[in-house]
Image 1 (cartoon, helix red, strand yellow):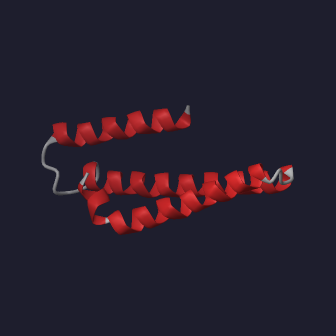
Image 2 (spheres, rainbow, N blue to C red; image 1 turned 120 degrees about the vertical axis):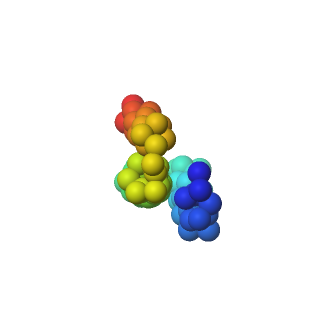
Length: 92
């Protein structure tokens, strides 16, 4: 996907922040922190993942569905089908 290559540094920075959140969650569980703290860390991690997902979905729509440079209906349909598949998996 060309758009992930263009946004590679930004996306990797987000993934690294998410990794830090996951590591904080792991440390909290290891330290037997209270459920409130663990829930807060879980919510923050989920929010970060959702934000990353939203950004990649938006880029996908702009590049593979709504891009005026796409001339072929088959290519546009492929972009739509890929997106539908990912969203269905994500919402399970």
